[in-house]
Length: 102
Image (cartoon, rainbow, N blue to C red):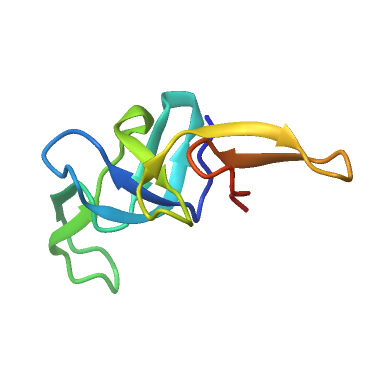
């Protein structure tokens, strides 16, 4: 998976198509990501201890193939490529504008 926590992404398919947000968490084994403000579901929680319970709205995971990272230059979705910089370190770059993504 080429996405990392903190990346700003746009949803490219599904009910939340066009929404933007930051990646909160990545689930690499399932190839899914949790994006802030996207795919909100209601969860019923029982009261336990100091928790009052109730119906909570939380972000559910979506498949990583349904999001694209936002290019810092064009502000649109782009694919990610890997290359090495001058020091020989592997970096991620945008395929549209060739900008470094870190």
